[in-house]
Length: 210
Image (tube, rainbow, N blue to C red; front, top):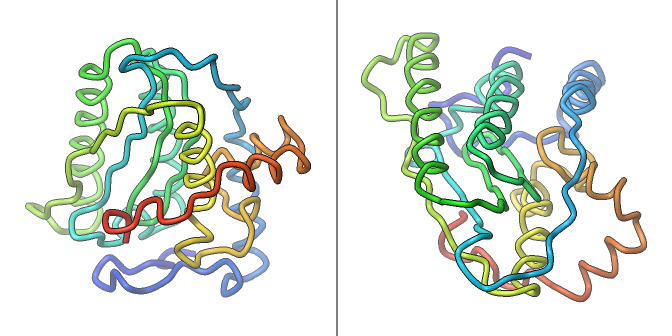
């Protein structure tokens, strides 16, 4: 599975149903190896502590998804970077051309700086692998402060639903690179369904996550 996504064809879809059984098993194994416990949310406190962070490959080209191993390595590096920056990650999802994070931070600036350094390192590495020196890989991360409990849960639903929204899989738990499986294991299907109905995503992300 060396070329599931071609970075020169950003509209090419990474669809679970089109993968071989071997590739599906490899993806699921990658998720299981990476599995980390889901962090339940704190009682909401007003102030710039909880953020929805998102970053996309330049012009939404599928550069991260060029190879399975690249997705696997970057998702691990992303979570390690967040942990080293002192964040608590409540939800995350990596897609072939962008990612979403729901995090609690003590200070946002060092976290954005750490993500910037990760973007720089990954850009240099991937441009070397793809013989594409000088190519712009990442756009700068965007941040949105979480306003209240309802915003928190709608954001969590949105992040876990993102692979389904973009047509990559039919169910949250089929996507290898997100916290959805850990979340479902922690709260149970019944509670996840209740939260989904209580905090619908509606038009969340319209205009900026396409």
